[in-house]
Structures are given as C-alpha cells and as structure tokens.
Length: 148
Figure (cartoon, rainbow, N blue to C red):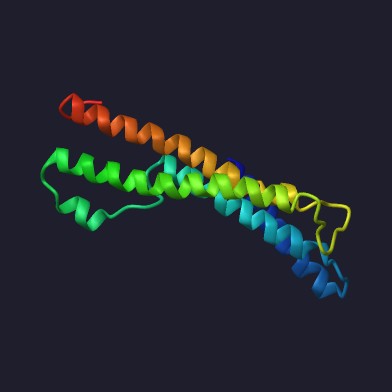
C-alpha cells in the first residue's frame, strides 16, 4: 500500500511537471518529488515482493528438483543469501540516513533529505523480518516432513 501511494505521488508529479513545462512555468520541485517518491515506491514494493516470494528466485533450477527436501534446502539457502543483503541494507541504510539527515533538497531547501533515505533501512528491516519467518517455515517443513 505504501509503495502504491508513492507510485501515485510519482505519477502525479510527472503529470504536473509535463503540464507546467507545456505552459512555460518552471516547477523545479517536481524533479525532486518525482525522483524520491519513485525510489520509495521501488524499495517499499521490493520489501512487499520479498514477503510474497516474488522478489528473487532461481526458478529454473528449483522447478527441476523433484525432491521436496532438496527444494526446501535450496529455498533456505536462497533466503539466507537474501537475508544477508537485507541486513546489510538495514545497517548501511541506517548509517546513510544518519549521515544525510540534515542535508537539504536541491529544489526545496526547507525539506531535509534524511527522511528520503529512510526507505533503505525500512526495506532492509521489513525484508529481514519476512526472510527470517520464511526460513523458519522452511526449517519447520524439513523437520515435520513437508508440513509447516
């Protein structure tokens, strides 16, 4: 839902930008708003796709496996690799958000850039939670013979 809101903001600012250019009015703020809202839409959507198991997959190899235990093991390995990246995104996202917190936007100097960088740790944190739960589910499938 958050990604959809930011995607809507992105689309609306692009429409405003096109209209103001057509009318000969300079609306430079639309560049920053559209760019940062698109970034937020991408990262929030990415975290949601991790939850739905649609973000990253080796489906060609996974689909060829017949053994359910082998599929679970492969899924755990994939989730662990993704978890490493998600944790790194969380940790370094926090650092970069702190570093750029007081920087201002180019075209809207009264806005701080810190909140625009918060999409990184939010995405990394939510993706980490989803992945830990998915790893837990796969381990439970292995332990209980295919039933989570």
